[in-house]
Image (tube, rainbow, N blue to C red; front, side, top):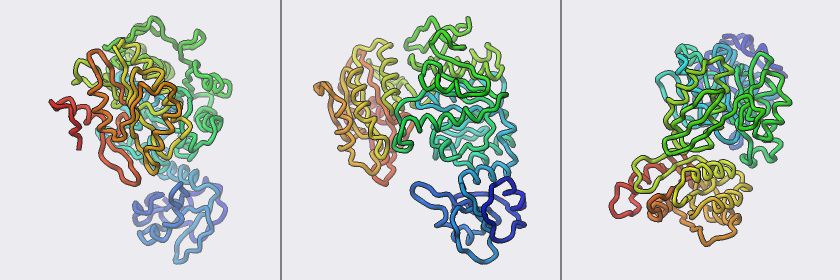
Length: 486
């Protein structure tokens, strides 16, 4: 494709060099650049793509999209734009043939529940006979290939490339998580969503968005940009969801426990076998544990209704999903007590899973958690307060401390405690898990929260292999109850 054609839809501020060069690929990572590529210079948090322009040229790039005035010579084309992130999304979509228009595209956003809702919708669409792609925090699924993600939502150029591959594979629908970061950083700019799903909004990511109103504003962009022929699926029980509905011009289907919700649940029975409830006069059987998953189920059911899926396929799809990795995941090989692994890393998510745990009737709840470093610090004491109020015993430990002092993070968590006699600090997460399991007695429930599906721990700049599930399994296999995780 000629550069002229590729940038025709951009609000270009300046052109240096020829627009008649042939472009064979698009990338914003200099190390991925090949001969004939267009390199997009994006200003990130840590790195500025403009500083890698010469490297990209030397690797074969024939042109670059830039925001800065960059002095560069030697038959190299520069297109200066005001916003290179949006320019990256527009050019990539054009280069790959606008793949989002060739897919049934469903985007899920919200603070909590995105991953499980994504998997439930995927299961419903598969039960409906569709070939489905998935982009989620846990993994990207394209045909038979499962790809480990670097972001919940891929960067704009990668996203368009993934969607193009899905189209080539004959995939008809894509279900994807859409993070607030992705919306703010224009990763999904120009994507043609058929259904947008709002799960809920509570405190998180204020290190990035700074204020709760900015956080909501970011989420709302996914819905405000829907055209009237598309559909928004919104949790009406959430105050932000109610506010959102008034600003949407597309078709809206609401869900929740409220009487005025379009899709609501009744006759709810939670137990260790899963969940059973009635929706639209149909009995829904779900293998996922935890009352909080009713909302995720309702969101998926509402999405199925929005897409015209018949109720039998919706029921089959819901029933077919037996587990989502790291999402209220029950460790089947536990002893007379139960062990649950969950990704809960916000106050609201921790509250929800603890209430769900209490529903299951354990003798005691032992909660282990920490908070990530270099992230929203305001939620740390709030999580401490929730854990203490809803648990019988709490062990505070490290999560991903990153560049922060893990002990300082723990001190901030302890700021939410008001009865420290049922709390303990064990800095090493592996040892903390073992301590929690040693503490557990018959009928107890051990909740290990915060990292969920993650198989790493970030300490400083180092990424170490670490998996909560592996620690639990190795402990349970050991006869002496010692910390044997290495």
